[in-house]
Image (cartoon, rainbow, N blue to C red; front, top):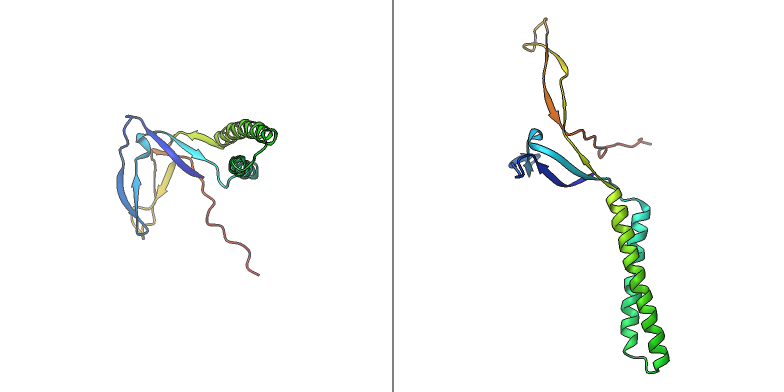
Length: 152
């Protein structure tokens, strides 16, 4: 998952710089966020295939444009111009489909508020516990980027 856009409730980003694991990171309080736009990762194969198809079509268009200058006969020129028009229409359709599929991989996530009961000891060696309810506002995100595999 990768986030691109976040919207704060006040319309302005109330961010501050913090240091996490030696890296400078811009942070914002979850209570100030109205929503967070998230994109699913990794990219599906159909989107990768569409991107490859667009690159190939662009290469064909470039090749035909370059070849168009060297063709002498009018009949061949007209045929290549027709082919260029067809490829240009196709690439517009491919880009529109790709934009639609990319948009289907994105969604908005809103912060959730919860009130769990927490049981804690007042100090480390205490034998008694204290139970109370706390209030939390958080974005419901689970990341799966630190999985270890089976060791052989």
